[in-house]
Length: 357
Image (tube, rainbow, N blue to C red):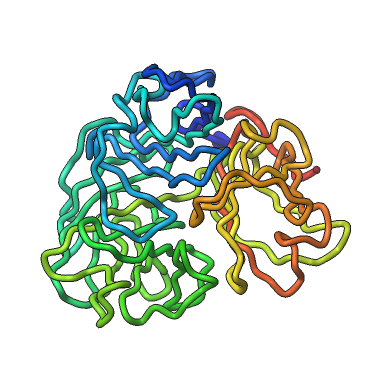
């Protein structure tokens, strides 16, 4: 029998750090079992209305995106100062280092601060890939044609893709394997949207996604477009890794005994989104909520400070998560998408899992 998981220690690939600002330049060090030098850092101040900051090792310490706005990539010298062997440096005047304010950083390891050219698709991409953890990020330059493929380097079909136009304001386009055909979502949008004007897809049923490529479309709408001639785009793509990550969907039941979702691991971080309603991209993690009920949330498309709400009650369990009652994450007429990363696998690489809760 093969191993249940190839990743016994999720902290080698994903970690969450929290700190209280002191307005002094310093290093933020991770506390996981393994050292992690991040390639993708997503930061947010929990206590104030500030941007969600996305920084990538291959773009350097001065370039950043903000998931709560549709703006182009920006430049600042007052955010992080370095990508370190187990965390990152932060400057004295960063918005994520204001004296007395609490902050969080979610960190993923890609391929290290080195890139490679990928010619698997119609358009050549430049990628950083951590195939063990099922994560890749990369860039490509649009060619203005429809139905063009992009090489991703994962070695398996992606389950979740985010694409952002780099140098001009444009939508954050999000494709999930459980989206309806030809549909995508946006960080700022209310729900699942038919995106014939410029969609991204890795749907296997029509060969738009394979173990080597995903597909982008030129379309007619510049704001939602994924392939304008000469424009540069950045993408992030993940695939599920048993015992470490999962990208799926569930139906709410509006019951006090809420929906249970089996993951095969104890989650450390989950982002949820209803496909139907004007509801946020809610993010919960065990660094901010250290015990059940998990109700401390941040919203990916909003600058709002951290909230705590009885309308978003979730329990993180040893092998998945469970909605507590009839709340915003458990409406009976809603389908919810999620992306989840492990704190611990349900069993180690040599064990055999069960589905008992």
